[in-house]
Length: 244
Ligand code: F6R
Image 1 (tube, rainbow, N blue to C red):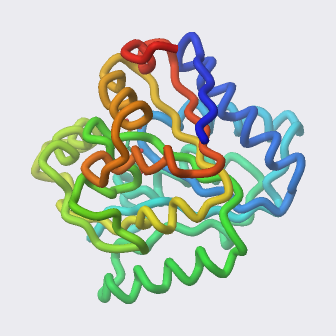
Image 2 (cartoon, rainbow, N blue to C red; image 1 turned 30 degrees about the vertical axis):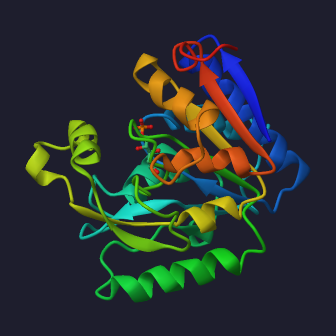
């Protein structure tokens, strides 16, 4: 069952998503938050930082798990997702960083790291809210379109579309890592609540396919239609191809 919040623009989308996360933290201070990187959640993180600094919300008892990390770059590299999380959120709120988890992209044995990451997630008694963005090809985390929905955390080869989309954040397309570690669809679907945020006209076509089309691993985000508590927060542009 999907609840849809339509917002005027990205700013309102970010406030609405911060409202949902703030409500969760107020109701349950020991919440486990599943977090995402990319452009979509930046406004939400800014708003959470603002609310934390004014004392409306408290991260001191919160634990987090991130969806994914590039393979082959370390957490202090400014292109890593660990670095993104530190600079956009963790460094600015009262969170205990030892309770924040991002897959280790530098692990020599990536398969063992994936197994370790799955046990970290399952030791947490469930992720309360998992935040998600959506790729133009429908990927969530780094689960790219494929034949079956992958279950646990695994290593993926990034598609050319994703490499190209992510190259905007790198000096050149050749600098974009070709592989990543990502939670699987099974890990993501195990969260108690999923919140997917989508903004902009360029996301309109995939939002329509994912939320109003067939559920298929060829559009990984379409699996959200089968979650019992999924929320789509999208602005008018991202919903412009849907009749709502
Ligand atoms: C990032 C992630 C990706 C992004 C997706 C959309 O942790 O999991 O699935 O959410 O690529 O990225 P943006 O928000 O930059 O459009």
